[in-house]
Length: 65
Image 1 (tube, rainbow, N blue to C red):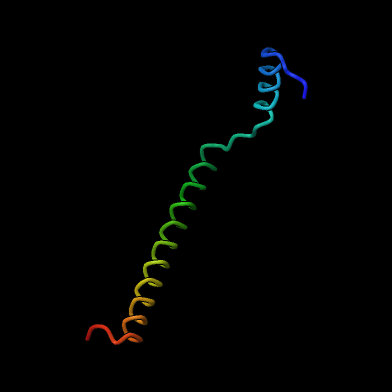
Image 2: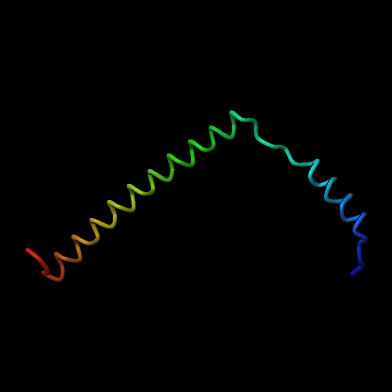
């Protein structure tokens, strides 16, 4: 493995950073909304799944009224 000088390393970093395409403000906002909606959907799904499984376990084991 060859060693890279600090100057060469910084040049390579600059080249790699120039290849990045950053999202526009609108795209970033849209993706944020998508992530929030998916988090909400998954939270509701896991809440309902938890409640159903708890009820089934209580029914099977005869715990509670």
